[in-house]
Length: 355
Image 1 (cartoon, helix red, strand yellow):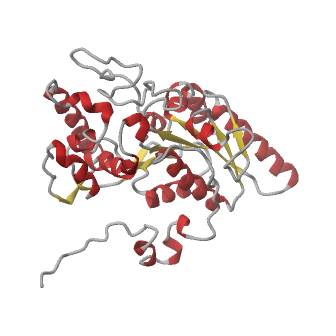
Image 2: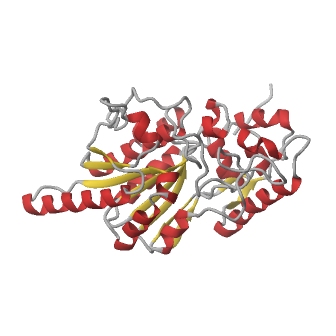
Image 3: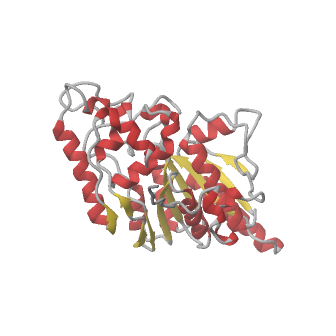
């Protein structure tokens, strides 16, 4: 009889992993005392990474504040699918802002709640602001930078699905290079999003020297919960940037949302780290380095990089981008498993199921 070694990498999951942890360390979502801040009945697409990320992030903030929390939400997917008039899936005070002024609205809310607490002697209601990458990195960037500069007492959470998904998959400044959208070049020598454009808002937030900045993905929800709770332990401006794959906009199976988020981290395309007052204090190490090609092949927005008209130079540039992230942030664990070989096309989806 042969023996197989079974690795339990995720000790924060809903089933076996939670029972291996002390009760104080278990995921909030495994508890019957969870807040269900974003409750059932919303109209998100199947496999929506944003709905998953918001559920965990807002519930974690609610736990950190004892339920004394209010939220401002930019126009976008999250606002649209959670509040079809006259219904709502939100179980906390929730304010809908314009596309571009969420940070400013949240700043005003925080000031009002602070003034009320001072006058009444009651505990101060904490405030979070939420938006997609379009409402954060593009339209709302000016208000966001102002919030950072003033160090307003707001946690801003960006749910990054790398395009304007609510209005038809248009390019944003968070869209990766070479990705096809409704507003990027569809043909030519280098179709897809242009290189050298866009902005890295987590690094910009760090440049402001605010108390706390972090990135996270929906592939590690316990890490996301921890970072939100840590952010709420600070006062002043805080920023968390969450990668939330969009099956519809990325052209990927809805069952692959978590696998794609994990591949983004394991390839180095999306560095997962946290910083305090402008200095990186921790990074999420890559356990098993994956080639970028394994991540891209699962998404139709990168389909033009493969096949008869493929341009190997573009794939090489994408790999260089990931490798620079790994070196810059020190993402590769010294005890990491060897890099997986680049899968052939028919093996790419099978590989994602094993991650």
